[in-house]
Length: 300
Image (cartoon, rainbow, N blue to C red; front, side):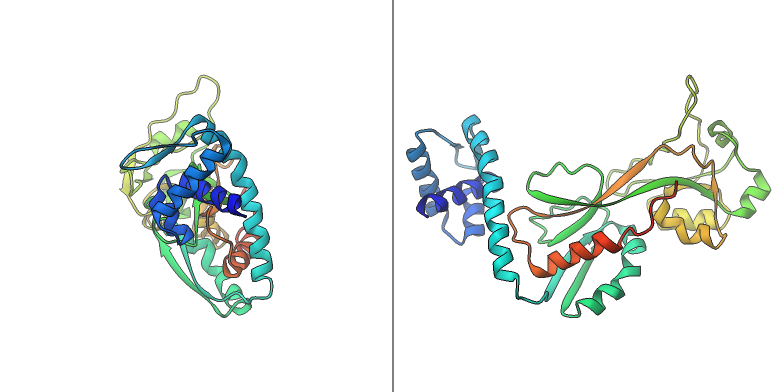
């Protein structure tokens, strides 16, 4: 058991790159964590961490040892959590980070979740900025794209795709494009990412040797809701995700443009801190959204 405690101190130090951070997670002082790791190094006869006054980093041997130890401790924690929480009802505050447009796919299913789990308080934070899941105190965040943070665990939720849309009145007035090059004669509504200031590219399928079209700008904004609304009001063609316009397409306020020429697809993930035990409230939320959030497949 003493060696298990040392292994846990080492893994948490490797994850946080700090004896102080590891101590905070384990409820120990930083000196106690440092002594525990030093004792483990002495037992193994190898240096696992390089230390300086500011932080610690893994040695080559430490990295290899960490990659073997981490899954074992994860399994042990999952087993403990399963036994500890098996008879507990999901309850308490669950802090969830979502992209700004996340209410489009989350709100329609929240009523059902609340009926099933009335003692879970959902604290929703809608933000397109990159957030530090661990330092920000989130229980879970929902994001798309690559997931490079090794401190996080991830569960795949569902796919989405991008599409071009315009209002029927706009297409009647300006005509409907038949191939990507035709977009050069149209008004285009562009979205600018709030966190980077970059304008989103339109990823289109092109014929071999065909150059990407020059896309005239009717409007540029950093709010995707406003961009979609501009398209609904006939200002031009918008490039957006299927879940943003599904209802608008169904009731005829928008029409799909150049179907089959869009080339971009994405994936939503649920991310939560690796070191955090999966509480009953988090487990039921992940299971629920995994089943209900993307019941509609992306539009082909």
